[in-house]
Image (cartoon, rainbow, N blue to C red):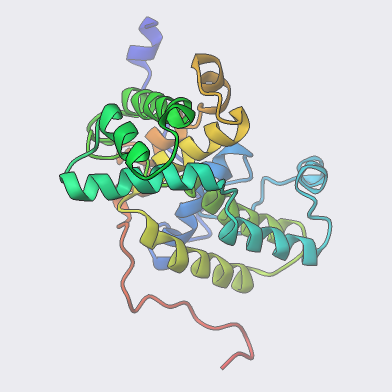
Length: 269
């Protein structure tokens, strides 16, 4: 480690002063923190994505196929429903989740493989996926910190990646002229209401996002090289979970009040 690394503290996050960092809308947009930082498109709490310039907008249109309001809304729908899912991966994770409930702890690799065999699937065909998930968990826990990503926190689903992208995509629509802030707030609210039930904490969600990203871009071939190329979001996750750096995940509660509801759009009942 360089001496400068020990002396110079990591910089604080700079939210937009124009928008709250503590209310329900801030809590909900924080679900897109990792993807907003990945592009990047502006302060994490700013639903207008002010950092999205003409060049970035052209890149989004080319890469995502969102050249119109209709295509933008379709992409958000895709990310919140299809969620980049692959059936075999979902089945393997479902087996692990059920086993974790039965055991009352995170299953060991051998136990997970045995449970997959008992379910009628081929454990050898699942081995690469299981080892990849284990490697991702180990790397994230090591980089982000075991105090944040505890041994009890494990990859339950890969949906976090698509969900985080959906929130960011909603904000990008404001910058691209497809919608105004009130409508985007409602979109983000609906994404949160639907998605949060799948996770238990910010750390759980962040781990799912990073695992989903690595699995998607590596096409399931997880090794040191793919982790370096696609798993670099651990630094942003560390920032999000750091109270000293003003990370939203460190101060905002994961569980939203059941009564949490945003104001309706103008003209709506």
